[in-house]
Length: 113
Image (cartoon, rainbow, N blue to C red; front, side, top):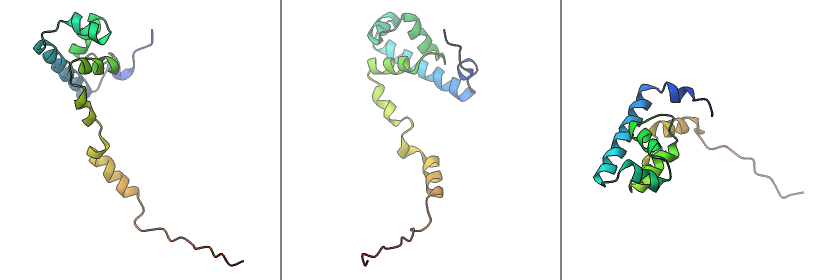
């Protein structure tokens, strides 16, 4: 069994809070659809214990399990917005700062031999 990663054992508070919120949201969606943990687990292809871990926001649970739950619940489409490069204002600012300020002058080669 692989050793747990540092972020899995001691996740930063914002990461932990986001996972817990995601787990609560998945639980709410499951309950609204009147699915048991076992039924959701069967649809995802994991054990009931993995679904319980998802709903607790356990950081060592694989991202595929979280995404599988969202897929089964019909909520995976919302993931398109996560880390969307068009919404990355900081990244775009850094990219603009690195780009050349003016066009590079290129030497034109002559065909005259």
